[in-house]
Length: 333
Image (cartoon, rainbow, N blue to C red; front, side, top):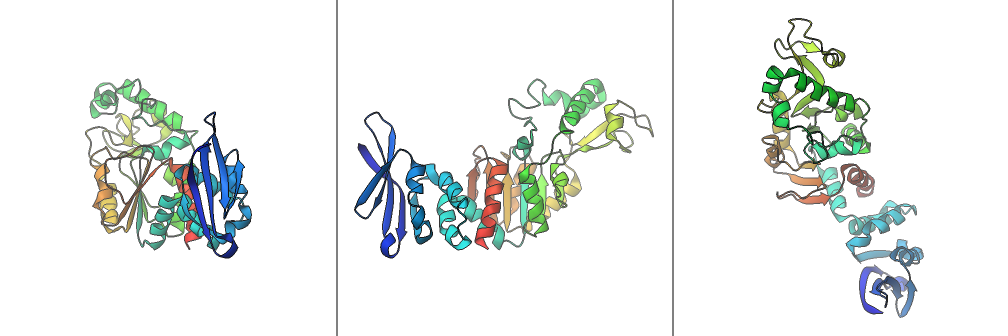
């Protein structure tokens, strides 16, 4: 066996003492694991079996080191065992350190703002139209999502937004949206500022939502601004009041952001103790600058790294990360 290295170290009182799980490579380059309690060592074919062999001491030890490769395996196993909150807390700090920190920030905050982008919606089945597989794949947005297209090539404009609206009809909020709505009810979230236009936060139950790029579910006449219905737009009808062209209330390229949404987001973020950014690279100006107006803690949850300084960065999917943090909120109480 080659190069044994410690992947988990547990510290306990009395008979528990110090316990380790080590891994090494066999002659055929397969990983092999062993537990080491005092002077005794037992060998196992995988990490999970080695960890399960220590089940009787889980309540009596504290993890002092845990290799990041095995953190989620350990946490999933522990949460299935029904450990008490008190016993889970030290494990949570080792298994999910960044998420545990976020849960503590949320609990301590008197005003928390959540700022969401396209990555929040993709897990509901909506393509990120800035990705290679998104809605922009075959259409240059500069030729469609513009005032020029609305006024000079309305058939293309109408076809594009009709396609997007029909695609959204079967889309539902995912558990991450539901969790944010529940946090709002519990007083843990005070505002959701979103770059998304799909209305999924409201559909999930969030009441305090500012749509920085407008809404695809609201429609109006470009000429007289009279409200219109989805059916009127999809059927290609003109405005019933003046005969003008109907459009969605999505902010087109070159248009100003909705002033009320911007003002409310600006003021609330400036006062926030915690700002949680979810599913956005913050590349879209000026909305992308909003999270950094806060003097409070800033948190990023995103699949890709972003070149900005956050107090906590979690690389992962929105839904799964929010589910984890929601579990941890119970433990940090």
